[in-house]
Length: 164
Length: 166
Image (cartoon, rainbow over all chains, first blue to last red; front, side, top):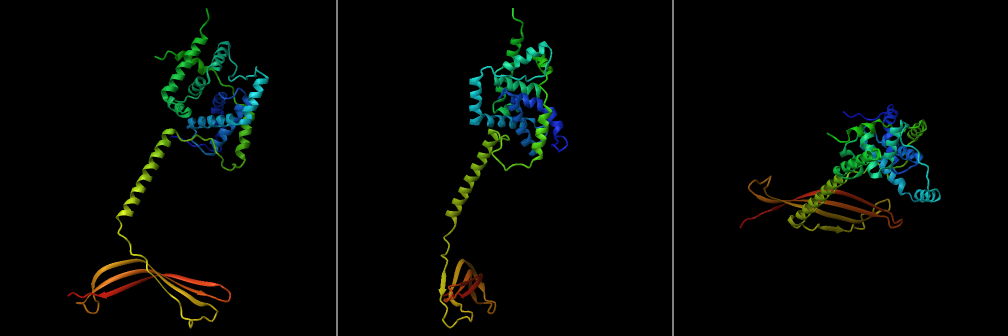
């Protein structure tokens, strides 16, 4: 049985979903502040429409749309391009909480994944969405979503193998 | 068995960076503000499949409406032309307020031939009964001020015409 959001539990909901949403939003921006802006915008709109708390796919779609809207903004794009041109070594803030060395290596490998694979992994692993939901959010087929996931895991496995 | 199950378990051990308290506060403030005018929001659009079904449904509805319209247009027998009878009021019909009757219009917008009936008085006599739905409009005009007054009301007339057989 799905339940709807109420005034009392938006914080509980966001505490649970927020980290995954931020991780997802980082697919479009390396800047954590920008990712927070995107997530805030999407979550507030989502909340106001009283969607089911279990309908996380819809929330992810909202984040994706917010991010794409932001990306389309000519002003921001120009600013970003100018910043990249001036400073090639852009500061990338970590997306994961600090862990042991193995976890740091794994986190770095996830960061290096191509965006389209990384977003599928993020939604699958840290948000436990189904391939059907992921496919719906990304407007791709389920097979494509599953393929991207497998390619990503293959790439991660390869990246973590000790070099000889 | 999934080749990647071990790797998936390791990935699940990784924790995404926690949400800053500041973001909670920002969202709380944003939610407390009244909602802005609706914009081209980014809540997810319906999926392409859903859009396709909508389009199909709308298309079919439109086609059905066109077919029905065509059938109605071609199947219906020609209607009698509305008869307009107009007479100008006699100059003697002046009103004390300065308004003069200027026109009386009777528009027959429906005529129904209800067939033969027996006369209520002479039961053996046959009559044809025709019913007219009309709208009568009377108009007065004040020539001094140019003001006009118009009254319009629906009316129904039943005409009984004797039928003779030879």
